Amino acid sequence: MTTSEGAQLARLLLGAFEAMVDEVAAELGRAGHPGLTVANEFAMQAIDAGADSAADLARALGVTRQAAAKTIATLEGLGYVDRAPDAADARRKHLHVTERGREAVAVGARAFDDVHRRWRDDVSATDASTTVDALQALVRSRARRSG
Image 1 (spheres, rainbow, N blue to C red):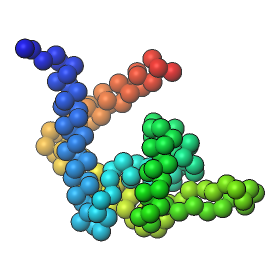
Image 2: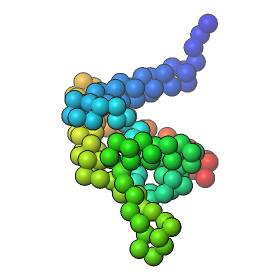
Image 3: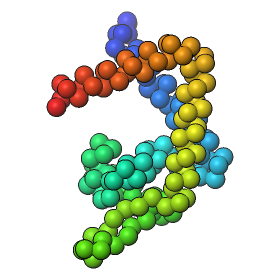
Image 4: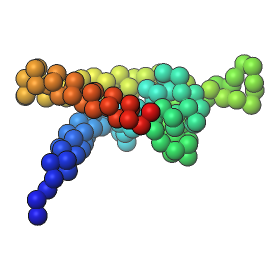
């Protein structure tokens, strides 16, 4: 049986993503954030960028509201996120990334940059830049088709 080129590309993209994520997760663990996932880190980045409710976080991450609520509960339980009351509406709570959360995001960002730099050195800066440009173009193209 012959595997399609599209399937081969999907496996390569998934394999590269998993390799990068595994390295970042390991670095987070070494830096005192065991069990923190890259998905948790992406959630904290979205919260820091203004997603201050489960609905906002769900939209930012492209997940269900229930998945976002579970992520928020996990991050709160681990001390990475807290909720602060809204000054205008006591029933509403706003999400905030804690100092511990900011430290974890910084560790993750450095780890992602280290992996990217190493991979760029492995294939050449030109090839790495071309790959990033091509992936960005594909994402933009998908957004135009679905938007």
